[in-house]
Length: 240
Image 1: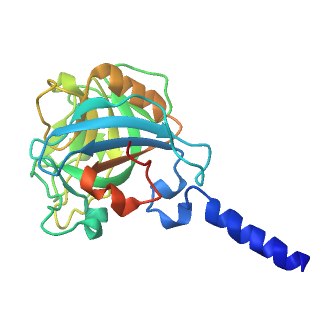
Image 2 (image 1 turned 180 degrees about the vertical axis):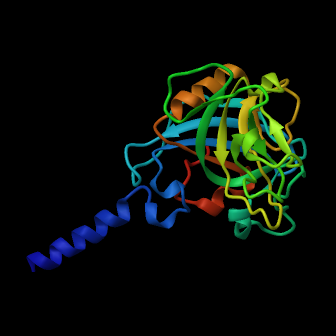
Image 3 (image 1 turned 90 degrees about the horizontal axis):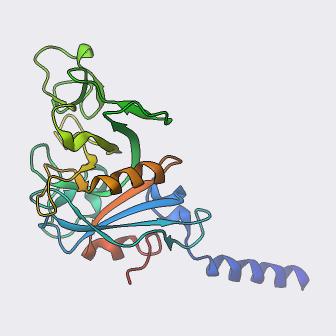
C-alpha cells in the first residue's frame, strides 16, 4: 500500500510542475533566460520586448524587466525556416530579402561591437574586415566572418559601415542556404523609434547593452505575434 501511495504522490507532483521542459521546442526547453519579442500581428514593425528568467528548465518564468518598445522588420515578421510547421493559414514564411524578422525561438549568439571588450564570445567589428554573409551561393551564408575568407564576388554586409552595429548581438537563426531562408539576423541599435528594420530587432543602444550582459551566460529569444503565443502553451510566460 505504501508503494501505491508513493506512486500516486509522484504522479501528482509531476502534474503540478509549472513547465514541462521536454514538451517545449528547442532551444527553449532547457533555457533559463528568455528575451520575448511580441507584436500585435505579423505585418507590423511595432513590437515590444520583455526579459524573463527562471531557476531551472521546469520552473515558472518570472519577469526580469519592464516592457520596452522595439522595432522589427519593415514588413513585420515571417516564420523562420525551423518553425515553419507552426504557421497557420496564410501566415508568411521567412525568405532572403523580404524585410521580415524571423518568427520562432532561437538562441542568442555572439555579442559584437566597435570597441574591444573583454567579454567571452565577443567579436570586435573591424572596418573592411568583419562581415556577415548574405549570399546563398556561399557556404558561409548566414555567418559572421572575415572578408579575406570569401571569394571577391560574394555578397556580404560590411558590419562597420553603419553606426547601428556599434553594439549588437547575433541571433543564432537556423536558416537554409538552398532555399534562401534569410540571413544575418541581429539585435542592434535602432535608427529611430518609428523605423522598421531589414529583418533584425532594433532598440535603443542602452537596451542592446543590457541584452549583451543578460545573455552572456546563455539566453534564447522568442519572436512571435501575440496570436501565436498559445501555440507554445506551458512553455512561454503567460501574457498579462
